[in-house]
Amino acid sequence: MTRFADFHQRSLSDRDGFWAEQAELIDWHQPFEQVCDYDNPPFAKWFVGGQTNLCHNAVDRHLAARADQNALIWVSSETGQEQTYSFRQLHAEVQRMAACLQELGVKEGDRVLVYMPMIPEAAFAMLACTRIGAIHSVVFGGFASGSLASRIDDATPAVVVSADAGSRSGKVVAYKPLLDEALRLSVHKPRKVLMVDRGLAPFQRVAHRDVDYAPLREKHLKAVVPCVWLDATHPSYTLYTSGTTGKPKGVQRDTGGYAVALAASMKHIFQGQAGETYFSASDIGWVVGHSYIIYGPLIAGMATLMYEGLPIRPDAGVWWSLVEKYKVSLMFTAPTAVRVLKKHDDAFLTKYDLSSLRTLFLAGEPLDEPTAQWIAQGLGKPVIDNYWQTETGWPILTIANGVEKAPTKFGSPGFAMYGYDVKVLDDATGQELTEPNQKGVLVIEGPLPPGCMQTVWRDDQRFIDTYWKTIPGRMVYSTFDWGIRDADGYYFILGRTDDVINVAGHRLGTREIEESISSHPSVAEVAVVGVADQLKGQVAMAFVVVKDVNAIPDDAARLKLEGDIMKTVDSQLGAVARPSRVRFVTVLPKTRSGKLLRRAIQAVCEQRDPGDLTTIEDPSALQQIRDLL
Ligand code: ATP
Ligand code: MG
Image: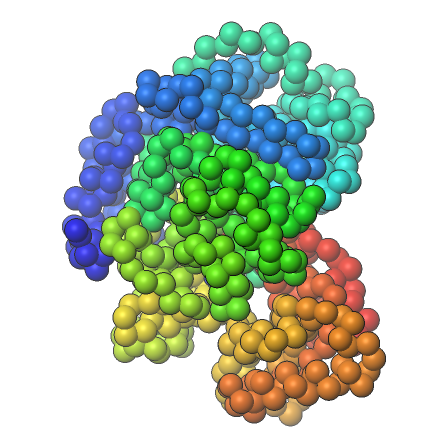
């Protein structure tokens, strides 16, 4: 058995040899001549001269061995529909969609913007694009017109694929009026809009522009559209970051490096076997949806379960009922979803037969210890945290049990993954902090490994300036996250670089204060921000969602709990970290992907403009905070 430390070491010291081996996990039409071209840093080109195709690796290559096994399982708890597609059926549907796109004039290199709910046609559209070399740009369904319009102008798509509506918590969310408005606002006008009609919300067709998918698909029932062999460096898609810290950045991904990186992660990190089922409860609008709903599991020959709906509807057992029904082996979700489940009866976790499930993976935001303990104990399954970014496409820090079994440590996602040369740097001096438990910015030494972003879409300069020029005197990729590495090589994420506050000269991570507050038994969720203060420079302000609002019926009860929480912080971190106020709200402002919008809370507290809010989930959450102040 290989030791992970050696595996990791080799990925850096014999980079090309290491990745050439990983490249054998996928099919190549033409072998590559060079593993990595890093002559023009920070731009890395992987598998130069090679030709492959993502859709071929996800679909076609499995036909020989598993044509009649499940490839896509679609479940909507919103509409009560379920549908499964074998690899053979998926292959046919993707070709039908590809033929439709071609009939609408889509050519290799064209962009196709996908603005869709979680329905099978969204997966067909993504795979159809990569099949013919069109670059997909998926925009989270239900985004408001303004956000959609700015993405349309950035991607300048030839065609938009959309649907009449999504559904959330049983309520129809009409997409077409949002899209029409976005297309009125945008400067760029796509030639055609391909509309999937689910029969949820009647819509107006714009003459000469809008085309219905169903009749067009009928025309192409027998479509044979071969995969186009693409250079490994051909862009496969663009995707925006979550917009947690500011204006979203348009990440551009390649083809060959991405396919290899995903195949390798399915083997070494997720340990997925062909023929098994993977259930990633995310959305195709996010990077997790791209990597681990669509491409990763399919490349590994697994069935992927695509779910439209909430984790608590019809009840908080719905996910586990699907695990039982479809014998799910691996599951992936975000801590925010677990926190939602945690507000419901624990008995749901043991109601169904979960014997098929091996591991639950969590990513996207800090996993606090109470949440991790609750779900791990409730399910009786290992829970593995993994830390990464839209930019990287696959985990930077986690545990690679497929290489060497390693224990998890609560609060830590794990080690630096193979291919990632992660360092902890002092942000002021650029000095590397090599001693254990020293706090600094997590950076990655170039080249970024396969699968990571190639550049910012159509803006190489922004790629350099945003990511590679933030540390004095060093050209390294900044994650914009604080962290430490302990003596065993485990990393701990301490929050984002702009979430550090300075109280009377003490630098404190808001995340540390949040961890402390969330250890209080009455606290369900918390956000801490630094607010400008004349005396101390900054003070910490905490906004707490309690588990039971009935426990704080009046001001006296609220004050008492506020005092209790402050005492908790005092005893764990010291009085210097004590928030100046603890305020109670019923919901925290988050992005649609479930991330805390601390910068917006901070701006409101400081009576500033909260900035780009295009990705906010529930604007009333910010209003609650405004009203409190
Ligand atoms: P933007 O870059 O637009 O501000 P964002 O950083 O939230 O938005 P994503 O790429 O979706 O966009 O999120 C990546 C970030 O999420 C990481 O940089 C980190 O701050 C946080 N994150 C992801 N996974 C974890 C994890 N397991 N533990 C702690 N933080 C995590
Ligand atoms: Mg980010």
